[in-house]
Image: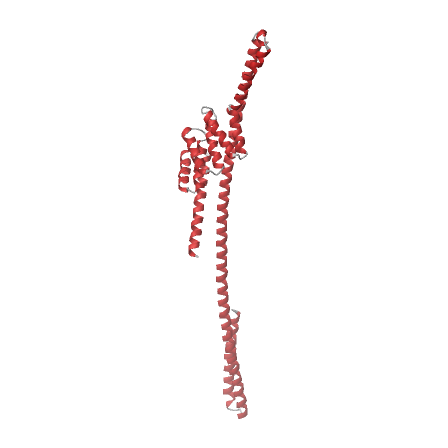
Length: 319
């Protein structure tokens, strides 16, 4: 705005100067000499030349102003484009981080659930074991009471050789009892599983289920058989083991966990459709359970992976 005002002032001064020169020329034409007229004409010529130079300078200033305006417009457009690209990149990064965080949270919740479940199982087994120990202590007390109530004559052995003959069968019976102890067999299988000796754990769980089918821990042995296959990444065998458990004990408390892990096994094998159907079944059958929450998170994780793979495939095709 300041340059335009200066240009207007310059034009106004130039016109005033021409008008003054013209008036002076008219005024002195009658009384000036030829030499004076020539000097006056020279002055007017110089003024005209200066006017032309000023016009050129004004035109140059206008051109410079036009170039500056174009540069400013280009700079604004470039700045806006850069800001938009930066914002878009930040939005994409934030979205990716949010998805990764959601996936990690889902895995953490899943691991926490199975840890809590394992702890509960161990506590229940511990209580059962304590109850059995208490029962054995009571039986031992009863045996001692019976033995103390027998006559002293029967307590003494009449023949030392007969006592020696009777001892070996008792020792054999005690050894057989040790090898046929269901609780010990189950505990050994659990120890093998925790120490990642999955093959040994499976063998003992299978023996337990076969030898003690009516035991209270028989359903657990079937379930942990599937868990040992799953932990060993033998997903097909894990699916079959979980299915056997579900058919035998459909109302057991571990049914929800078996259905969930069976769905996970299908997903790990690459059969996402079947896995998704089973996960939805868990959500439908046990809507307010922890297993249903984990199933929902797993489905969300699968959908997120599908979208990411679709985007990557589209980008590759464009390239």
